[in-house]
Amino acid sequence: MDKIKEYLDELVAKNNTEAFIKDDPVQFPHRYSDLRDIEIVSFLVATIAWGNRKMILNSANKMLDIMGKSPYDYVMSGGFEKLEDGKCIHRTFFGRDLRYYCKGFQALYEGVSHPCGVRNDSPSLEGVFYNEEHDVWRGIEDFRDLIAKANGCSSKHISNPCCAEPKKGSACKRLHMALRWLVRNDGIVDLGVWKQLKPKDLMIPLDVHVARVSRELGLIDRKSNDRQTVELLTAKLREFDALDPVKYDFALFGVEVMP
Image: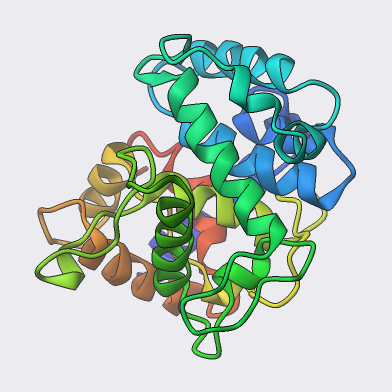
């Protein structure tokens, strides 16, 4: 494993650079200085980050053009109410889906009751995700449930980390990617605007490529790409860096063949 750690550390150093930003969806939250704009943009752009990279970037630009100078102002003013249901934002993400997310954000920022009875009166969404156990899975559950409550239904675009067997819930790749952007702060790619959650609390954003590469490197051997596999892989990466395991996302996404 020492050789693999050395190899991955080299890839992190190679990819975690300012040059990475211009071709990655993380460029979009970098455009904003207001914390609430950064939060909203991080979750929305991460949500549509699947498929062709060029198409993702074009779709994100289109979505943010709709929202104007301040996505937060757009949300709180109710500008999303004018969205047409069938307006295509990105592949299967339509105007009704953007409206769903925005209505949820509006409710959260207005102080919807937290499941534990604590009001979210903070100007940041971090309070929804933070809990005493530093359990980001629970944070995702609460985020999903609160937005569903605001809309009266759930959405396929906000992954569910739970099922009959909780450990086999969704890998929640795109939500974990948004959390990486918001929590990690190495002064390079990720923005690190949240301070209660720490990089050590994060889970690796797991997609098909990262899972395949991780199996080829012998980091995991489980076949399913689900919550349990995310936990197993993150635990292995914590052996390489206990304080910042998801920095290896910069390595695993780009691995082709082990030298």
